[in-house]
Length: 244
Image 1 (tube, one colour):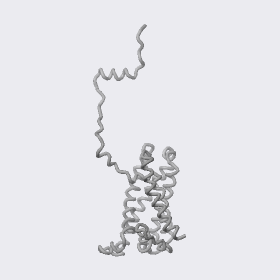
Image 2 (cartoon, rainbow, N blue to C red; image 1 turned 180 degrees about the vertical axis):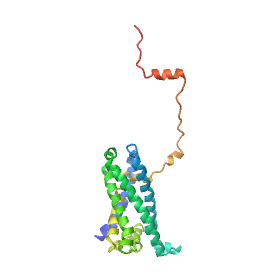
Image 3 (spheres, helix red, strand yellow; image 1 turned 45 degrees about the vertical axis):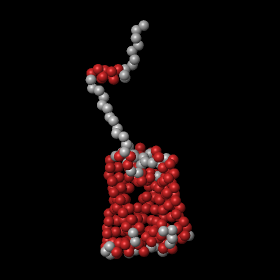
Image 4 (cartoon, one colour; image 1 turned 180 degrees about the horizontal axis):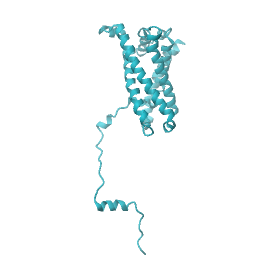
């Protein structure tokens, strides 16, 4: 069971992530979009979207430092465990609260605005459930496992396990005995990674680079002379049949 959850499942999720994006790009480029619903409602979107997206930048940055960078590297540049702990908890809490408030507003908007609700696909619903689950369990790890019920050093277990997957020398045994919140967070994130290419989250890997090299768009104004006005006006009139 340990091998299945913490070695086989991650590689299945990573394979789905890579091949799914390739398939989606080759077969559904017109669907490679956020499917923006701004046209239906913009007031709540203007509030929730920045909170969610800017908060996610902080969350992703925290995961890069905490999971992908070994503790020995941060110690080598003079960052003590206590300093790292204080920064991680404070910054992670702020970023996590911003993301949860943001996604809460976006979910409220998607549920209560009829036009937005009708534009929500099954993949969107699954993505929101997984994303909300990842955020809630992540906050439990940041706040609960560090402030409410003791401190747990995930950089000694979860981080080495995750890095070991990329060195092709997986160590699934490191996840045995970790708090249930970390295990739940890891499994939910793996599920989210697996379904990522088939949802609107693909827009994260889009950048408007083509705007820098595309041809100029030429705009021409409508002539403003009296004769031209009559000519354009007649184009909308019913045709007048000549007398017999």
